[in-house]
Length: 169
Image (cartoon, rainbow, N blue to C red; front, side, top):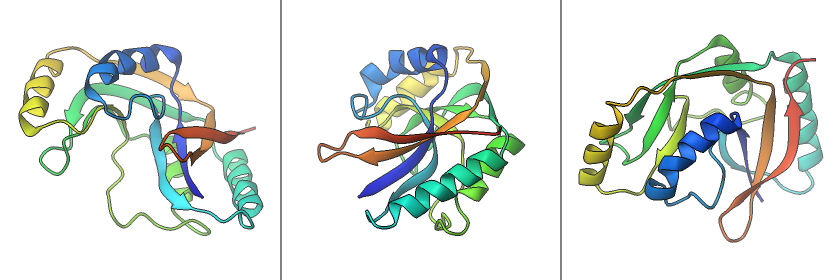
């Protein structure tokens, strides 16, 4: 089965993200606004108890994660994705690094750019227009997130929480 690991920000940021996602994100109905800290990966039913035990151990040994959203940005031209950019913080980086070392696979495909997606699967012209308008808006949000979620993908493509792990003790 396909799993991923995400952080869910507070309702205030989720509401703001959803105000854009309803219009600009083709995955709006599949998963709430989130920060992906581990891209989708396959786990067998036999290996799932081991993975959840490792996640519990990682979570208990790390501090809650600070996020600081500070602007709207895009991955264009590599991808027509629009997002709220999050400043790198040592707590977020530490979590990401732990989730990309043994027993988890390292991410060799992308550099970690912390963000909350607000638009995707748009045309190049739509991205340029939307980002141009949104960059004029001031976006600021700071919070501390004390939980990470192991998600799994359903047959219809949507994601749901399998287990929640509290960061720190």
